[in-house]
Amino acid sequence: MFKHILMPTDGTEHSERAVARGIELAKLCGAKVTGIHVMQDYRMMLGPEGLVPSELDEGMEARDSERAASFLAFVQKTADVAGVPCETIMVKGMQPYDAIVDAANDRGCDLIVMTSRHRKGLVSMLLGSEASRVLHRASIPVLTFRALMSADHPEKPNPRS
Image 1 (cartoon, rainbow, N blue to C red):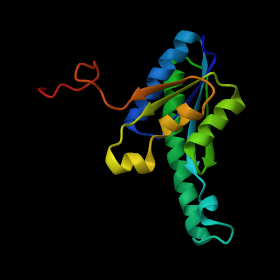
Image 2: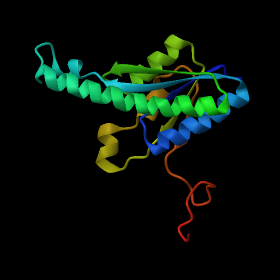
Image 3: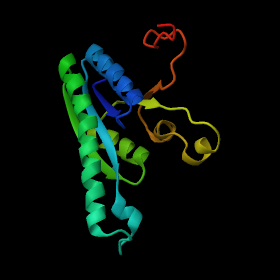
C-alpha cells in the first residue's frame, strides 16, 4: 500500500498523536517514515541588509534547531520502539506547507500524515491551516488527524476522574 510516509511535526501534543498513528500505519504497511520539522528562515524575512543584528539571528536559529531536534527525536524514538525504519530532517522555509510538499516530492513519499488544528474567527482567516494548504498543494494523499477529540474517543480523558 504505502512505502514511504512523511510526517511533519511541530512538537505539539496533537502533532505527536498524529505521528504515533502514522507510525502504526507505517508498521502495518511495512513502510518507512521520514519525520520533518520546518524551521522559519529568518534571513528571507529580514532581507539582504538584515534588519536584526547577526547575533540575534544566530541565537534564533540555534534555539530553533534545538527545538526541532527535540521534536524529531520523538518521531525517531516512536519509530524505533515500533521497529519502523525512520529518518528525520530539518528544513528551513518561509512557508511550512511548501517545504513539506517539496520534501515529500524530493524523497518520493507516497503519503503525508499530519495533524490539523481548528482555528476560529479572524485567526482562521489570517493564518489558515498548514494541513489545508498541504492538502491543496500535494499531489499525493494527505491523512490528517483532527486535533479535537470527540467525547467518545478512547484517549479522551474522563472529566469525572
